[in-house]
Length: 190
Image 1 (cartoon, rainbow, N blue to C red):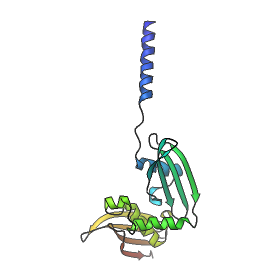
Image 2: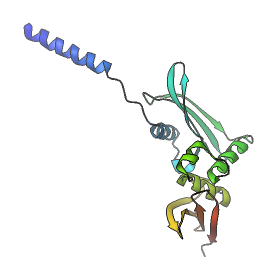
Image 3: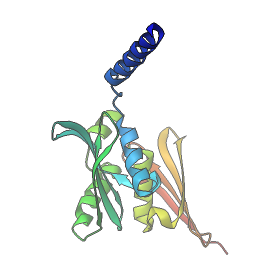
Image 4: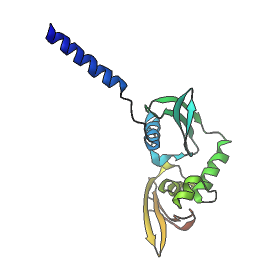
């Protein structure tokens, strides 16, 4: 009987201790990955709006919004502490979304400065890919995209290759500092 009481007390103590441990907050990157996984979209296919933390009914959340250009827009509220998707909204692309998307592309090209760009001092790899895709007139799922950051003649740039199913290759050199297109070339597969 005494052994059973000790065991019960030990179990109760372990249960109480496990109930008081709280989960560590998730990162913004983890919240973005969770949103992408929920809809089965790859990061290369989207452009994220600048994310922010917010309060929703007393719960701290990340507002994670992103576009698949020309197709769909996604809005997620993800709990900062648990990673749970609190709310999600998926809408088809509408004509009035073009202006907001254009602003994001301008920001990616360096013509509108966002807080993150001001700190980092250059565009991201994803932004460089989106600039090349927009210029070539493709959506991310229509071509194979390769990207590499390189120093050429003292200038940091992104070398981007877009390859279509028929073998046509679009090559871009995009300046990392401001997103300007330094060079572009199209090679048709014969």
